[in-house]
Length: 187
Image 1: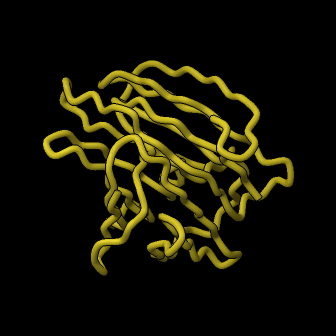
Image 2: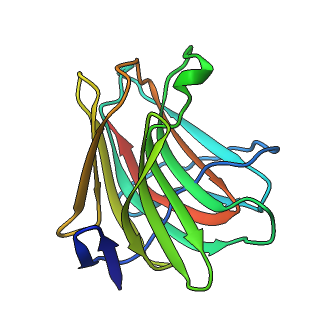
Image 3: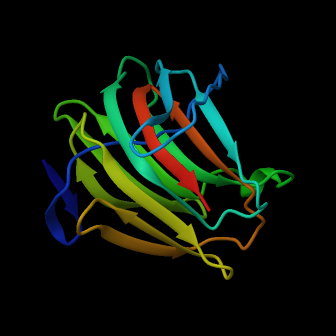
């Protein structure tokens, strides 16, 4: 399997994360250990599902896990996406659960793209194929420097500044995809 970054091809595998669209909300969560499925999101194009993982400590500094895109529904006008983002209860709309990892899935050719999202800006980090779990690690320091690592054993790393707001949850979401979030942990 191949993962591509701006620095060239890197051997890694595949996966995906999602968000976007509209309409239906549904949640479901299972306890996670290792590569066990934390949550599976299967949402047709034009629908949106999310699972909010609260953080007992009250402040999220990192989220780690693996993601695997099984299929992408390209029948509608919206893209097939998955997302792992930082959430803040009591934040305004301008501080939505947007900063974090965005995964877009495409057919013809079958490819999954991993993006860093910060302050409304989307930046490509890596590319991979369907059906291969890809490791991700997203952390934020107290000053708002977000660091994203995608892939393993030699991850692609990208950083960006995000607003220094309270982050008290992690939001897993998808639209137009069938995706597994595996072994997701927060700190």
